[in-house]
Length: 66
Image (cartoon, rainbow, N blue to C red; front, side, top):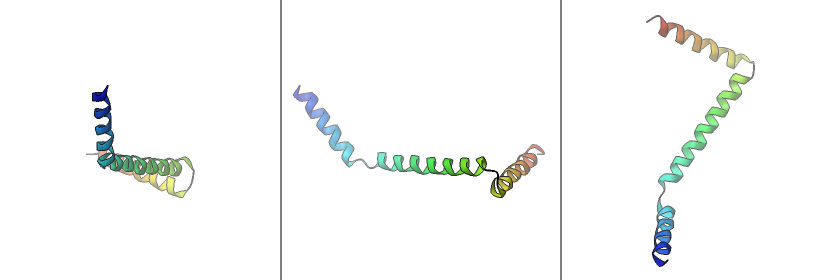
């Protein structure tokens, strides 16, 4: 029982000190915000989404011509 307690305590101490998980979580939040903005832009029918769609079409047409 005491071995389990010691292992759990050490794992929690290491988790508190480890900052890599926090950075990864921040990247996930930023990526989710970017995805939300892209969805919002393409979902609405305005000049920005029309321009982006036209640009993507031109790029894909140029890539297919290679």
